[in-house]
Image 1 (tube, rainbow, N blue to C red):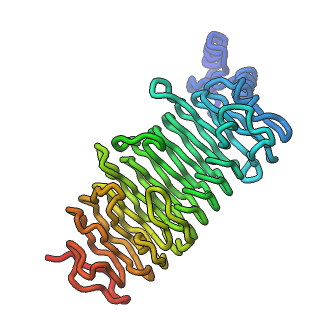
Image 2: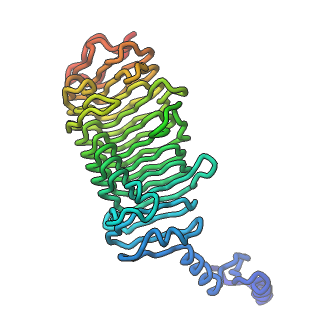
Length: 388
């Protein structure tokens, strides 16, 4: 800081400091006093609630106000956590902060439903801007994390493992961000985003939901998207599941789709999972589109997904179980190799406007795909060029 040039300047600055309650440097810049800095630090501390091993996370949530941060120390917490407070942050100390089922399992609605963390709202009142980060949810009878009716939920650096249905389930929610999470060995999807799990209807506009940088392994499906629009699935590592990415729609209006699946690594999803009420058995599926529109699948690395399911293959178009065809989807600029029975497969021949352009692959089904080269590229070829 430059020295003041005159005693008069020093006196004037001091007078100004007295009026505004802060110190003034030369040039008129106000600097916080020691008392102001201490007050600011005290205010920040008041925004945080600390929970140590052996204490109750739910108790901290119940007394928290909007905007507060709940810091949870490493340890295992045998409880379920119900959140409806807006702008609340639940922050663990990393994977060593573990939330697992309690022995009673009836402490709150979330526990009674067999879930780990529940973020709940209604159509009239959405819990906005809740953040869950740096913790583990494990071993629940249903979903590790279940959010419904949320706006701006962020799930960051969370491990969801060994849950009996989904690892992370979000429905009826907008502007959701899933980033840098690990979901493994969940009986259904690692990450599942849906309009609604229990009602039919048109696809939900997610208003830009993002699924980015996650590691998804040993689940039934790595990423499941059901009747949603406006999602970006990007830069995820998806391996060892029965299926990698499933984009699912039906006859509802608006249609499911209008989303992007890009720059993901989808390899070796060859686990076997039995048929469900809606789908045949799953094995060896990389990326599946069924009954959706205007979805872009681009710049993904899809390799070594192999099985004998009707949905097996690298990147597959498949008619929906209710007879709705895919339309106007673009599969372009992907690397798809070593997938069986085919790297690229269109098993929805009633679909219209679906294109396969500039993909690097070895096998297709049928051999002539719409809007692609009539010949299959050899393994040394860079791509399949669009037809003229």
